[in-house]
Image 1 (spheres, helix red, strand yellow):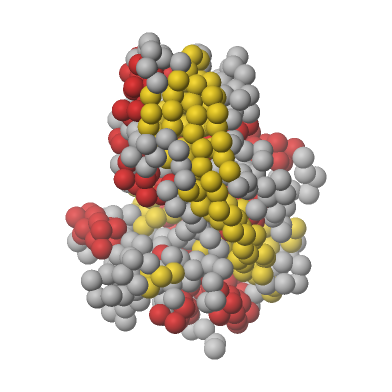
Image 2 (cartoon, rainbow, N blue to C red; image 1 turned 90 degrees about the vertical axis):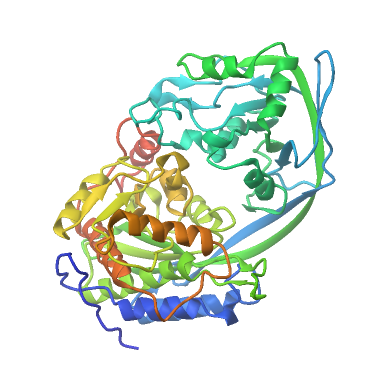
Length: 542
């Protein structure tokens, strides 16, 4: 098929080569159809999904991007816990006993048939943060070997109204994400890590924790089967944590207040915890699809475009009996978008830098496709300039504004603002910065290894209807279609907003690919030191 260039979006600058909306529509529609059964990875439908994406990448002008191959294998492991014992806490006047599911949850990152945490000393480590660039270390002076870290959710200044605190106030940083807290506990040598759940700083209730942590868990396979991780990671209800701290003769509120002040020292509680469970292990393989448009004068420097092809497969039936979660918006639109962007860039001609297009797997299982790529990059991360990640573009009208998810973290903000101005758009603050959306999509696997990545959302100020209409549309999707069988393709979709989205993504990516600059994180950002170290180790990149 010969793609047809789409019209430039209303209110934006005319592009020399506009991404093809008909091509994006074609790809989005095909990936949303019932015969692909919701695009679940490692199922019988995966080969058909991959064959289709490869064919579209090839027609868009891409070359195979993995040493002459289109696919990158992503080996994964599924671990399902069962037979969980209660968590018992000993050492106080009266032993405490917390039931699995109602009061605590726990899983293991280790590939092992059984997990047993026995009489592990409990240490309250505040927010569990080690941030050298901020002069903050909750683990200073404590040896965590064999011990269980008790950790507060979010980061120390989450309750601020603004974003001026050391940890950016109300805006969650990576130090506030549960993923970081478990990673840092492992680096500190802890036997286990337990986060204290609290609804406001977590931004979700215990029901979400319970449903997310009581079934199968998915991880990237590693050479050591995860044995460098803690034995167990989990959560406890706040009331259970209060009872535990009380048994140590201390007050959780007072400890929390102390943990919010720079210079806090970890507090051994004089108590031990024991719990355990069995693990059923299943290993499988899925695939990323990788294509490239080679560059001209700086072909060994790379700009990435990413989006995930997977969705939930068959899921809980709706009232009509439909049990296919098609994932039309999430994220067939993203694969349609990167295909159209590849086609537009191919028609526009090669850029100085190489452009890499990756359809990632297993995003819905914890960003595993991007995590595997970041652990095993086809193109060195020190030679990767940055990129654009696209996840769940919403049908609907064009907006006057766009939001930089994660806020002003890097030099990419300057390019973002310049491009908005060129296209007659404006920037607006990210909605709900406290929820940490920057750390919950595929770009993050690269960002935490130092690669600056765009993750841009259409704003709420719609040309037709203003912010009230924009908020209503966003709420409608979350409440009625997100991760549900109703996230389906419709011939009646309004594509004007996605047309503007695509033009913006095209210009952001192409500007990076033509530029000679190397964007970096701001000096106090949590990923600056990682990027600087990566650059210092390379003679060919940043």
